[in-house]
Image 1: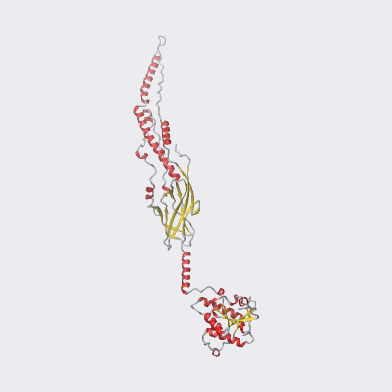
Image 2: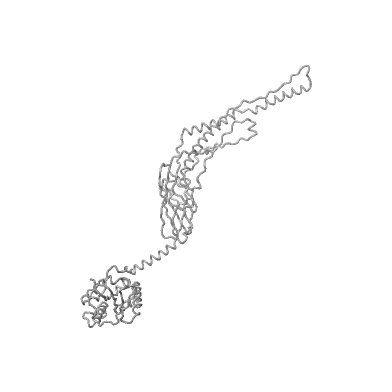
Length: 486
């Protein structure tokens, strides 16, 4: 529309009220390129809006028609009939209610009962009732091409409403049903548990942990031999020479002979004879010496096994780390009958941390050779030289895992290690710590990354929770010494 001088009288189609912005939300003078705009409301427009106030097929038409009727009535009842009323907050825009319906019989080609024809007839009547208004300044604004074409045939200026003013399309009944169902599902989900798994480290929930490993080198054969030889020297035994006390004999002289000297010499001789008899009990027998040699040989074998086992223990211990997990429920209700399963990579060995075996005990040294008196006074300790003492101390982890099956925890191993907790109840907003697991990592130098995949099921959750946790490991060769109990 070219620039107009003066005022434009614009009839608005009912569809514009229902599917485009409100009439008081549009800058009509700028849009129609004129100084002033009077929005003329035809009787048929009010009639259609009143009908849509009770439309049960479309909530949007119902709400829009009621809102528009309320705005129109709030303006026109402020003035006398057929008097223009200014639209609030819209400079140069006014509203006029057409009070009389047209007689369609006087307009050829227009049929009574046809809503489009009645609007066109109202425009024609307005033009004839107001001859002082320039004909080109009376326009019909609509998005209905059929009605615009018919109005143009009747000599009415037309404006096709720009789509930029159109409101978003109304949802269909099926779409409304889907929205309602989605809302109901969302409400159910909001009332359900919402679970996830995390590491638990120093009271902090983590999805990734970083570990440093001190890798102990393989045991050096020569070092092992040196330790055994040093121990062999430490237990070596050399018999000491017995000390025989000297006895003094009193010699009788011709001038010093008495009964007393006879008694003393007799006593001295008796003591010497008694000592020689007693000294036989203080002699260490060959049998006792042979016993010590045999015990020493067996002890050194056990000591060598101990050194090997202790090195194996230390190596395994430095590659092992405890892993703590917790289940977190950020939902609004507890999760009952919860099952948590974690799939570990095949390279990792998993076990029950509380069943990690203790450090091997250092064997006791053999008792040195003893005299008969010492054996009689001190009972000989019976040395357990059973072959089981020389067995490898650390059981295979597979055997450990096979025994770890309680009411809540099970560890199984196929192509990977699967750990599963059953029968858990996870309260909302209260994290549940799980049984601590032990993991033995490969003795690889440098950086390695491992991914743990987990699944969580619960009786009152309709879906499976899936996720993953990450472990970053850095391994270095250690120079730390191995502790040996004294």
